[in-house]
Length: 446
Image (cartoon, rainbow, N blue to C red):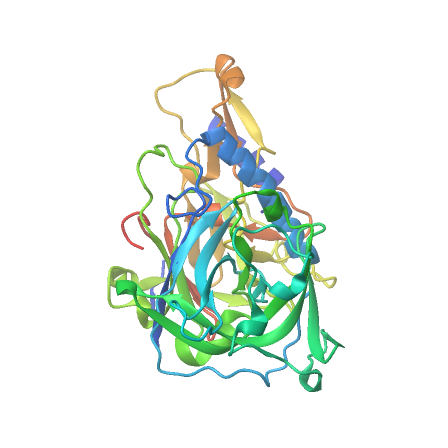
């Protein structure tokens, strides 16, 4: 979400008239990313039209942005972490609504096969806490297909005692409780605990990481997922900054590195299945199918005080070949914490706020790209097909085509959302505060 009004003026004007760096990677893991419109998704709906998909993403994206403005975070006490080094793991990703989800195993249950309980969690690069709905919630949970996590039956489940409660949690009945607010009204209260998380690997095997700090959800309110009778989402896999984020907890294993390559959310031909998308950690970035992409553009990422999203330094924006020449502090973070520019794979960025009608039908429609000029001379180019969306409305087609920008206006801060990350290999190096990116055909290289 950028200052879209200024950009559209430059686009109308347009219509009328890269250094390389190498990364060094430690141990690895690959998770399959699951898109809701993929046949792998537990809530796959093959009968949705392009227009219905776009309207759904717009509504959910708006809610996601509001959640980033109001979400509270947990503390940074580092006394709980215990991750074994020298492990290589491979997890998996699907798409659900405006978000991607991963399938994970949680807990240890005797001689059962598998030994863990399997759940789908949202992949969230903008927030910190990992959590799932627990059996202790009783009736205070949103609807999900399948049982809630039976925490008391897992031999590896260990609530964090009140002796170690972090500052932003509170002690209740001998355990630490944390409260997180999402969207406009959605909120969760969870017991902070440690648990074993297990991820599927290539070849049908699995790998486990012990002592992951997570929230055992005991009171969930107003989550829209519960309105879907087929919902299998049970919580969130927090990937943002912060001690409770997965990257901070597994830094000894993966060196703070993760990567993804997103495919289009709305595609021209839904009859053709999507190829798998993978969330890669550590040295699973190479060797393999993406080894040829390890020379990439690079720019810095940073944290804004206690907030959990990844911020980027934007120096200017170009529309086509025209630089907008923003003032140096245009995207700066303000004293009240607003402002700044966030990269978030959980925000689609699509909207109908800025549209124009084409009254004639030339053989070729010339539309501009949009380029973000990040620090370190790293130019991030968004192709025309991801800058604009051509309306499929029958009413509009009778009176000329309607082209809409895939940007929302937002007063609080700007976003590089999932839709504008499509067909790019994105690599986060959280340890060294760097973001790497390169053009890629994500349907072929993932």
